[in-house]
Length: 279
Image 1 (cartoon, one colour):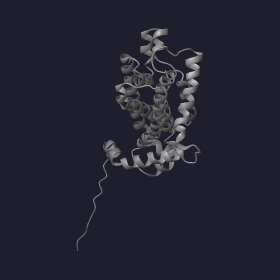
Image 2 (tube, rainbow, N blue to C red):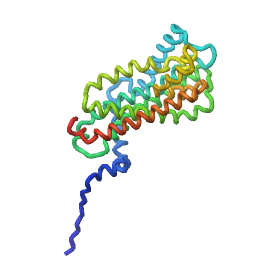
Image 3 (tube, helix red, strand yellow):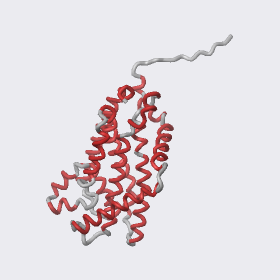
């Protein structure tokens, strides 16, 4: 008689050693959660995916009027002001929506987290994919605006995906940190929308960051880039509107992005074991 036996080895800290390998092993779960979030996002909405166009369009109109007409920040040279605004609005909305979705993602996946093992980092990462879909839809609006103004973008528009990846890393890093905090302190679900609401006015969405150098100094513009989304917006405008790229500020923003990515991963991994109990 032949006996088949399966040997089960329990090794202390095995999940810790294989954490990053497990992320790859559970990649199908990443696809499932991403698709779920996309469907939930547009389910039971009258306008559906059209909101990806309506939101940036209305914001662009308001910002063009407030900053371009009232504040008189529209330059005489360069691209049409609505295109300049939209070039800054696309990365901002991608970042802000991704941050909002990822920071609340752990609370929205209570049943999954409390019952099944998988690398929890997959949940915030998958939630940002919905923002990527919105970005793609909004980009179609940018193409329509370019056609309307007969505007031809420069060749460096082909580099736009690189700056989108940087925006993703920033949203992911900050989102991981706040998602972990949100599990323990539920107040953060109210703080994040406030931060986003304030953030749109302290980033160069409705105006060019060149204004900072003109009104203050080049040094002020450099320190202004401590806000990591500034360098990303500058990169988008360089790709879309030929605006001169301020590389020192961009590298400072990149440094801040990498810092927040490291901070988010470090704190998330530090507190991840307690999520099932706290949530």
